[in-house]
Every structure is written in C-alpha cells, then in structure tokens.
Image 1 (spheres, rainbow, N blue to C red):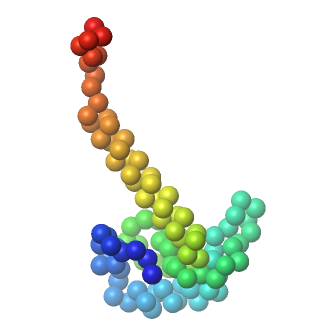
Image 2: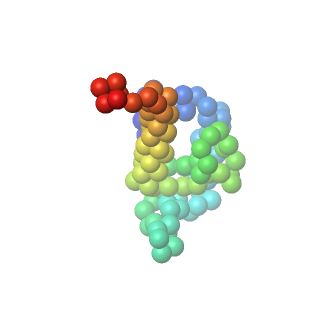
Image 3: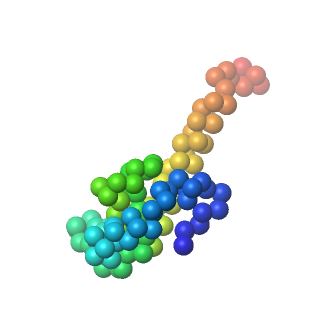
Length: 104
C-alpha cells in the first residue's frame, strides 16, 4: 500500500477507484508495463496503477500497470523534481543582486 501520509491523493481518487484499478491491471495482463532502454517489458507482476501524466485524469488512456519498484522509482523522481523546482524558486526569490558590502 502506498504511503499516503501527508497527501490528499487518496481523497482525490474517484469513488470507483478499486474497479478502475482492477480493470487497468486486467487490461495490462497483471504485468508491469515499464519498458527498458531496449524496449523490453518488465517481467515483474504489476501491483500498482500509475497515472502517466500527473494530475486527476483517471481515464484508461492515462493509467498503466506498474510493479511496486517501478512505481516507487517514478514517484520518487517526480517528488525530487518538485522539490528541486521549489528550491530553485526560493533561491531565485531570496537571491541578492547587489554585491557584498565588504567586497566593494
């Protein structure tokens, strides 16, 4: 089960999420759909349903089955990118344009 602490993600899922999740897993043959750099599909059984594009689009075209490892890897990279954007914005917001007075 994913770590939902501190997130409103579960609240934003549709009421019939379990039915949608099962349909997507069945559609993908209960197998992870991640493909490596050679185009080979992961052989691990799928346990998670992932949103391809972030947000609340729960259409079948935006959902895919992933194994827990690939889902964690994708979610982790998305979280790291979001943190980096926030840090960049804060750095830009609080950066000083003038030089240090002791170096003038």
